Length: 179
Ligand SMILES: [Zn+2]
Ligand SMILES: [Zn+2]
Image (cartoon, rainbow, N blue to C red; front, side, top):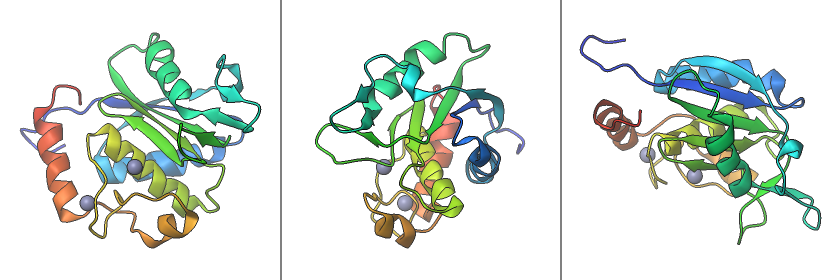
């Protein structure tokens, strides 16, 4: 921690039975990029969230999972924190066939590893979603914040923030009370 910088909120990481092996490498990647410390690792299955599973689509509604994560799972937290839930199920939002993840700035994100076929891609998309949690938007530079809705697009982008997003991140982290 550099002198004079404010202390970041901590990260709570949630995972399910089939995403537990990815917790450690993802946690390290997020620490590298954002300087965030993961204080809790919690096992939690999407199937226990009522109404989240869409049997016709055989997918989970990411918006329902995200609001559940924000409202219910944060209740027991000792201190105000940010959350990332890595699920192994396929997820969607209305209007899209699937998504790799969804996020609410200042709060939490869901990442689905279902379609991501390598650990590098999982780390990359986790960085992307946490970038959204830190208030970053989609970016058209060569940058991890590029939008991707296919494996091809996910593979083509780097696993780091561009200069513009790094600067935005620094400013936000220093000024915004939600981090
Ligand atoms: Zn995005
Ligand atoms: Zn960028």
